[in-house]
Amino acid sequence: MNQRFAHDLEYGGGSSVAGADEAGRGCLAGPLVAAAVCFDYETWSDDDFVTLDALNDSKKLTRTARGVLYPLVLRRAHEVAVVTFAAQSIDRLGLQVCNIGALERCLALLTPLPTRAIVDGYALGGAAAPHLRMVGGDGRSAAVAAASIVAKVTRDRLMIALHERWPHYGFDRHKGYACADHQQAIAEHGVCELHRLSFNSVAYQQLGLGLQQ
Image (tube, rainbow, N blue to C red):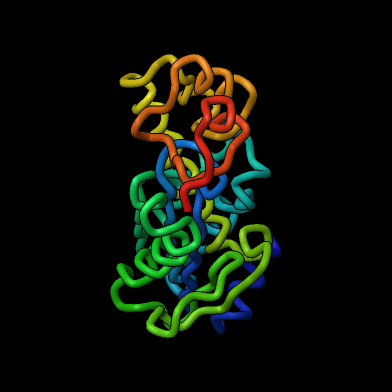
């Protein structure tokens, strides 16, 4: 059995465990996306564990592998919730506030609230669902790994769709991250409403844009 399942089963006492993770925290453009996935392991058969044996941190999986696992996760999850924060919200509220808020909200959308939840990397506020903060949780917990895949695939698909409106930035390729091509596009075309102007990026410095918060 995938050791990430073994971890969840031990933590949840063989019952349900929810995981929460985000995608897009370090991007120059596009939303921050957080997802929560609850697995009710009591209802699973051996085939369910086998089918999702490849679950891992989404960053360690290829785009093809994430695309294969995404519908498999959705079919076996007891519940899934996704929350997004747009670039304007990130600039207004701050990245960390939005990051924590998105993770809190997606867990809060699970009904009923999970009694066992694992959040990748961050301790949430006192009003959040009971949870365990786990650094590197997307590589240690199956539920968190599933949440990381849902968040990543959701965000990638959104950025590909947004590419149709702003094709000269290449969002379909780099998804808003600060690669050389993206920075060059910003230097040539300026920024659009998808860009987070609160980031003190080299690409923004080329345009005379500094840190706003």
